[in-house]
Length: 236
Ligand code: GLP
Figure (cartoon, rainbow, N blue to C red):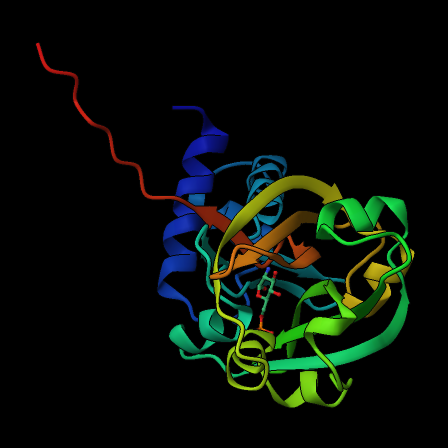
């Protein structure tokens, strides 16, 4: 095992014992304790910062970061997801507007280009911390009277089923790596060009129609994606 790898593993054990937000010892202290050069310590710490386990704050030191949220790739809503983890979900509506679908969105939502579509941009929060930006597109005739305030106090999926009698039963989701642009960085409170996941989801109702198209930017430092793997063993 290389010195750097060994140092990384020792710091990893240290992180395991410390709580979220606690400071780790300085590079000088760690290099004395582990009997390796400061350069080796710094390289190991850089590694752990990149992996999101540590966070550096200029002038004050290096701290244990919040563990990432293990996002399962299922059909849940943001609200359900956060509640299940014991976190308090929140939502801030940045913008709500109606506009003609146009050709591109019309094709996705299966409506004609002149049909009105409601577009809502929301910042999603968990325990008051920013997690994601979601831009929702839904045919206006499906959600009459939907307001910005509704979406700050209610889950969209709950509103759909309780107020509009629409149950989402399935859909398609794609995920791509990306980095935050200026607007996204500002809304999420992260540095420009921070790593993020771009989720795009199209869902359909029990009646078979397309309900929503959502484009979401999830913070890369707060999420990792998890899937359970099952395999049917071929018969011999
Ligand atoms: C997830 C999905 C979105 C969906 C949202 C609904 O975050 N990525 O496509 O619109 O959940 O969440 P809620 O019901 O909390 O508003």
